[in-house]
Image 1 (cartoon, rainbow, N blue to C red):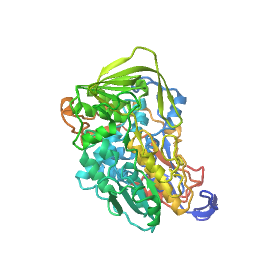
Image 2 (cartoon, rainbow, N blue to C red; image 1 turned 30 degrees about the vertical axis):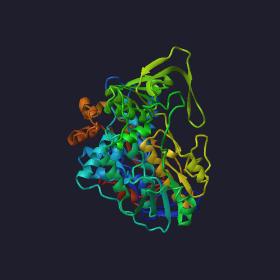
Image 3 (cartoon, one colour; image 1 turned 45 degrees about the horizontal axis):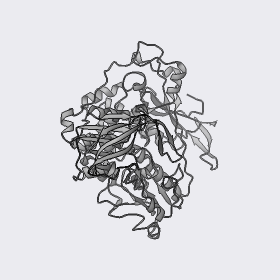
Image 4 (cartoon, rainbow, N blue to C red; image 1 turned 135 degrees about the vertical axis):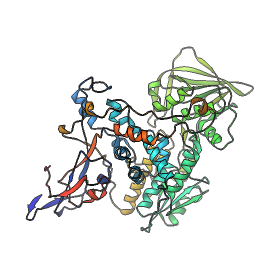
Length: 588
């Protein structure tokens, strides 16, 4: 970078594998780190990648300034490389909207959330909360920030105040893309592509959008009216929606391409429930979890006896167990092959199930179901000594030779995974892996057929809605790169450590007791399918949001900056970013 007359710098920059360009820079952004709320807007707006997130180190050497354990300097440095923003699969910067909530700026918080998330009220209720796992407040001080609850509160506020409106997509590209499946993955992919100007048509076999969210997520976690309104708003104006259509059958992939579609995203999930191949799995009273949950949602639920046994230890298993309690079971046991500390369900899901009375039997596998007149009566269990995992992620338990355990069970529900429609994928001519799923490029979701991509539960995973949405977003980016003939950039974003003078000392933070989120009383919860987690009080949430330690802020790598001012225009917090004299790389 060369200095020229009149306070101007001349920079030579190169993007990707292209040629170098000489750019005259007349100004540079100057960022007030103490006023930056780390919302991510400027980082996304920067055309050269010059804006990056910095994370402050948090001192935890002294035992008396916080409840958390002491931490050695090397461990504090390792923790600095983590952030709530990096943990979010779809790209939220939670610090941004938490700090706006703390100021009472709910409209600004809504703008930040809705710009990234097409289903904020859905994720505000059923997100897996990976950001809260990384929240340094929870790791080092007391409890993590209630990021999911804050998102839910803002989404509901926006709906109640007329701020949440249907999205409008402008078709300025004469390129058609088909999306098969309107669950969270398909909808996110469709919304992202429509926002870029593509002509998107979503094909859904069911009469309504929603996918597994509509079919299998119980209403005590996600009320029907919430997902219905959010999917409708996200489809908005500009995305065509065709229901009652099964892509791969009618129309086939060949017919879609023949009709002018240039790319297809398959996001129709893994809609088949599974049972373990043990004796008695076909008795009356034995169900797979997906069929059971779908029947309950549709008002035609099977009879549930007094003793229910749920086979599985994941999120669907906890949902099925809590549903069985609401359908009349007096004793519900959840049996899983993993040790309790290794269960695939999230810790808070297990806590919620236990709060309602579910027993967890960890480290056991079912070996047979016995019956009385062909109706399930008991489940025989054997202790698991080890678990083996094959290359497709399928688990096989090794059983100990100890005496078996027998549980009374007139209702048995298998929540042991979901299966894809392998014969449909074969009919499409797609290569498949050992588990019957489409073989794809992990970075893009591209299948063995050119122009065909896959996303969501079709690719496996834990059934997390936020991960499914992230998968749809990756597929949309891959389709955009494919149709525009450009390289797909999949670089993982990281953070840089802030200077030591930015270090946070917990003893100096405002002393605030963490807010406790309200819940429906236990008796009322089990008596109906009403939503259990209640909305936080707005004033309490604003106060609690002040607990955010503001670990992160943004800084500029001036060697890459071209002085365009896009970061300043994107900043929602006023004059945090100002344009001043041009700076070269290494300048402050």
